[in-house]
Length: 114
Length: 111
Image 1 (cartoon, rainbow over the protein chains, first blue to last red):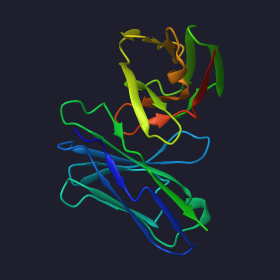
Image 2 (image 1 turned 90 degrees about the horizontal axis):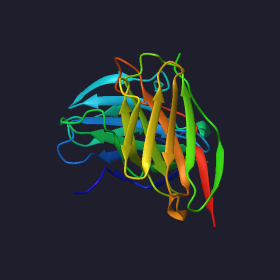
Image 3 (image 1 turned 90 degrees about the vertical axis):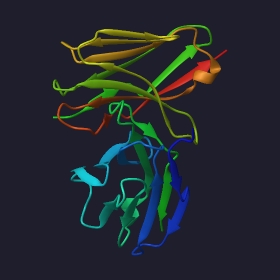
């Protein structure tokens, strides 16, 4: 049983560029979440999907951020026109249908915006 | 509002018990969680408690919940060097699927 996987693990980009991250949840987990974690802080919620439907979005998710989960399996998080303040660890988590309260996290994608 | 507070640092001797404390503000919280994060690793779900419970035990871990004071604690018995990590408390507000995390407590275990 593999855990949540995220790709890439590290991304360095220049300010103004677009970046896209991918998350593959644990097999048959129907719920998927994106969080962001900056140094010395706990994760902050960004958005939540149940199957392919995006049901919750944080006000942290500005117009430059968009997330999709087109077939209810993997998800992508895109950041357009990156800013230095976007530098953070982007975490993905998933929950099974049988235990929706349990969120299992992936290793994260570390984004550095120069 | 939604806020979770934790002390930043705890140092214990190997073999002693560790107690990590957390307070939260949202009285509608349905579940409360403890996660562990080791350097360079993702968040590991340690345990969680439903808000209508006041205690949960799982091997060396004991979670105590005082709903009246909105206080959650995690006790680790017989603390080992492998327990050195950052421990995050989190709440799940009622009606939501998101988790609200504290800033984490760094646990250092010394011989």
